[in-house]
Length: 308
Ligand code: COA
Ligand code: ZN
Image (cartoon, helix red, strand yellow):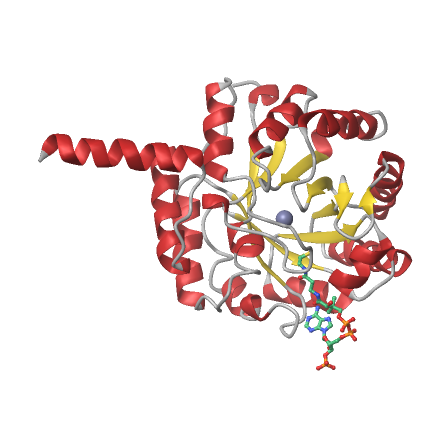
């Protein structure tokens, strides 16, 4: 498979998925899920956040989780940090990569990180530089890149300006996040095209939410303009607790099915991924799964009936 036909998925169920879950999922169960995702071929896993445990108590076990999973063979483990304290904790824990989130609007940064847009931009640059000084790659997210729940539509020039600041600070990858699932395929294509005029397209990723059922169409729109890096969440588990209207992420199983059926390789084994989604459902007590999971369940139930 040529590089142009390869899709790199960063699995975010453990971070974006569990950060908004109603209860704290014990570390042991998080580890089971992490291993199950890795068994399915998901080698890039965003496992947790090094943020204030008061702000996100669900991920208060970040140190322990990373310490107990960083040696999993072949897995690139990343964790989110929003400030210097967070990146120091991440580095000390032994993560392989840091993810930093800068929101595109002033209000969203204040709600999410207690900082103005200006302060958050500087804090993100500091995180990236500190990671680089420890030879750690960093993914810089521009969140609410299409629409902010507080300030409305976000101009593409704003996203481009912030993206360039992150890359100049040393970010190795840029991720455009549709945090509340407000974009449609045309907006995805337009923003990606604008960014790709100034940034190598191989360094741009998309983080999509499926709030209005457009996640998979948006991913295909991204592929059509050369994007090959995507975030997604097993079972579609996810949503930012600080962004009203944020619903589940694009489900990894839907992304994999779409990409593979379009002739792109993901390295993910779908039946093993369905097992991971079942495990995530048990752990969270929620019926999870994208459309392809419902299809798989129906087929499995039909096969069971057939064999009985
Ligand atoms: N890890 C652990 N604790 C941290 C921390 C970090 N990275 N950053 C700050 N804190 C602690 C401080 O030590 C302080 O603790 P104290 O109350 O015991 O003294 C407390 O958090 C408040 O710190 P302060 O610097 O005043 O920041 P704040 O209250 O404005 O909060 C954040 C800033 C970024 C720490 C907080 O908003 C946060 O963690 N948000 C999480 C956002 C998130 O995860 N969003 C979803 C993904 S984008
Ligand atoms: Zn998200």
